[in-house]
Image 1 (tube, rainbow, N blue to C red):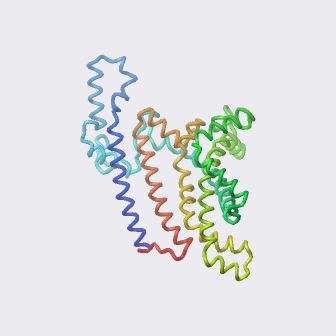
Image 2 (cartoon, helix red, strand yellow):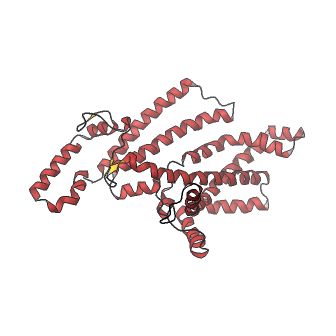
Image 3 (cartoon, helix red, strand yellow):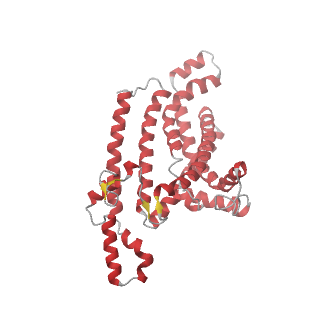
Length: 339
C-alpha cells in the first residue's frame, strides 16, 4: 500500500507540473498587459514620456520582458524573484497578487471558499439523503408504476440545464411564492452572531441549495438504481434469499454494500466538489463563492487569481482520484491497490 501511494504521489506531482505549465502558458497567450493595467489610474496625470518611462520600469520590475519559461519558474517558486532575491511562488505558499482586489490572492480566496463549502455541504447531504434511498427503492421495485414515474422525472431533471432550473425556481419560490430572496448571503445591515447568523445565511442560501440539489437528483438516482439492479441479479443474492434471510437484510447488508463500489466514485466526487464551487449557480444568484470569484477574475483579466483557483482545482482533482482508488479497497476487500 505504501509503495502504491508513493507512486501515485509522484504521478500527481508530474501531472500537476504539466497542468500548471499548460495553464500558465495558455493564460499568458491572452492579450493582456498587467503593467498597463496597473498604471491605468494615473495615466491621465502623467506626460507621455513620464508614462512610458514608468511603464518600462514596471515591466522590468514585474519581469514581463523575461522569457515565458523563466516567468513560469518564478511563478512556481523554482527561480528567484527579482525584487526579493529569493524563491517566492506557489511552492512557498505565495499564490500571487490580485490586480483587481489590490491584495494577495491568499487573502481573497478564504472568505469566498467558506461560502462555497457552506452551500455545497448542504447540497451533498440533501442529495445523498434523497437519491440513495430512492435509487434503492426503484431498483427493488423496478418496472413498477413508481419506478417508471421516477425514471421519467430523472431523465427530465438530468436533461434540463442547471440555469433553466435556477430560473424556474426563482420564478416559483422568489417571485410567485416569495419564500426566499433571490441574491445575497445575509440580511443587509444585520450584525447577527452565532446561531442567528447561521440561520440567516442558510435562509439566503436556501434557494441556490434547492437548485443544486434538484439538479443533482437525476444523475445520482439513476446511477444508484443501475448499480443495485446489477447487484440484485447476482447469484449470491438469490442464495441469500433461498436461505430465508429477511428482505431488508438481503438488500442493505448484502446488495447495497456491493453496489456501493461503483457508486463510491460519484459520492466522493460530490464530497470533493464542495471546494470547487458551482460557477453557474453562484453567478446566477450573485453569491460570493469560488465559482463567482473565478468568473470575476476572468472578466477583469486578473489571471494570477484565476491561475491560483485553477491550480487549487487541479490539486483537488488529483487528491480526489487517489482517495477514490484507496476507497475501493475499503468498500470491497477483494480490490487490492498495493501494486
